[in-house]
Length: 131
Image (cartoon, rainbow, N blue to C red; front, top):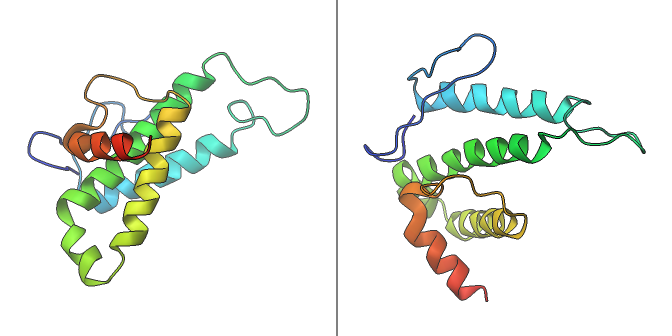
């Protein structure tokens, strides 16, 4: 799973993959979506009952979710964008991405200086045109 040669994403979790593991994008994304779903369904992380407080590490957990999901956008833009354009889906993809970036900015969910990686220029343009 990679966006560019400089940005390769390795999978790691608390269960099967205790060490960062190289894998093809479809497998990485499958693990990622299952991991995200497990986290969202976890009442200790995302409580759904009134009066139950969020855990102290909630923001760190959400940052990790956002960071990992961002990698899917990076992979799609770097490896599959011509197909997206050929299918006429680029306006939808671009709008979805813009909303995702604005959500990240609004709730201060960036983590690390290289958070946007290969899409940094694109994100910078989005943020300049949205003000």
